[in-house]
Amino acid sequence: MRDAPLREGFLLLAGLALLAWPLSLVTGQASVSSDEVVALESAEGWVTDVSVVAVHEFVWMELRRGDEVLGRIEGPEREGEFECLLEKHGEVLVVAAEFVEGTPETAMKVTLWAGAMPEIVLNIWGEGELLEEVEVKFHE
Image 1 (tube, rainbow, N blue to C red):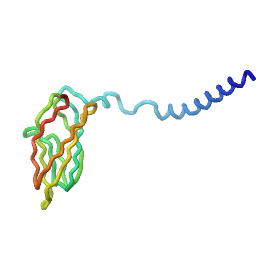
Image 2: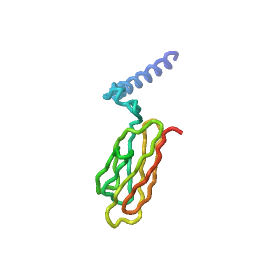
Image 3: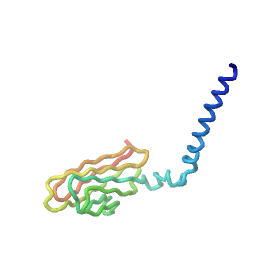
Image 4: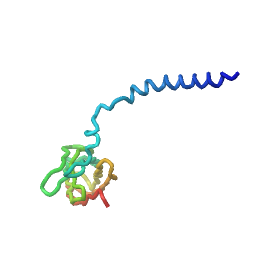
């Protein structure tokens, strides 16, 4: 009678060990080095994912810093993504797009995400062409 709790405990531990072995195979060593995973911040700025979703098809869409094009999506598309490098302390960017001929007033959602920083979501309205100057700050 005294050995029953020990035997039950041993059987439970053996069952957990059988479950732990396949789990250890799946969660083994990472295939990507930590330098590649953590490379969100560089000396120049934040590596930023830019996601674009539009209500109507656009011919092209660009994100610019002055005359420099940070990213461009060729259409006709309604959505797309690209990466760019943005300043750490904020900057003024220009969102430019040209929509398919005959498009009524439409909206475009531009989402900027720099890893650990909160997302910046910009909703921009336009008709035919879009040229909007926006200020982007990851730190407040």
